[in-house]
Image (cartoon, rainbow, N blue to C red; front, side, top):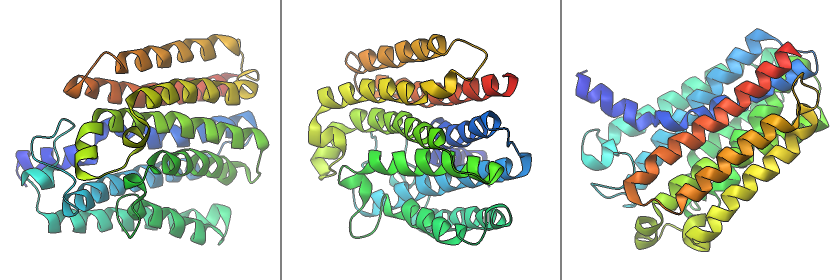
Length: 293
């Protein structure tokens, strides 16, 4: 495979969004540390599963949006290899289910740590990977993308990662999982905010299309504030002041929300990566603080 082809496949993975899946697992590790139950092997397996599932979802999104005619060459967002002719649709479809199958194989190894009940959970996750962009009612086309992110990148990875290490369910972990889901939803908000005009033209009803850019900017800021409040009890268990990191990260998120209103087109792309990286940094800081606490 040529260097150009490799670059196209890397672009299709959408690396700037992958911190979203990593952040959920890292936060789950942080909560496991808080409850004195950290275990390396299930944590690593959860991380591999989460990243592979997101890559499969990104591939599926590219393939099914292309098939539905929702992407056009020269789009404002990151280059789409299938739409631009760099990757054949068949190759992308095969890659989607190959990566998803690999993710499922990794997920099956987690049965050892959590039990057979993980099988239906894994099936639901696999279906969610595809249902986000495909099927009779694609979630991302009907204003439900953010809801899917909260569930599949927040509630499920944070709570399951903690459970598979500790063997217990905790109320504070559930609050934290919702918080991380809200921060993950912010990444999608920036993506859909940027693409609102193009999505409206092709009939793709994202939250930004349905509610308008001004409202989703407000939602972005509200998500950040609510997320910090939901995790404030866990921060009080760390050796640092619970208010200091929460205030710091809230200010950064509000700053990005402000920049959303003054940038347009391709100038919004850095804000997408910044939102994803800020989410990851937040989860890493939280987990490090729990580790040294």
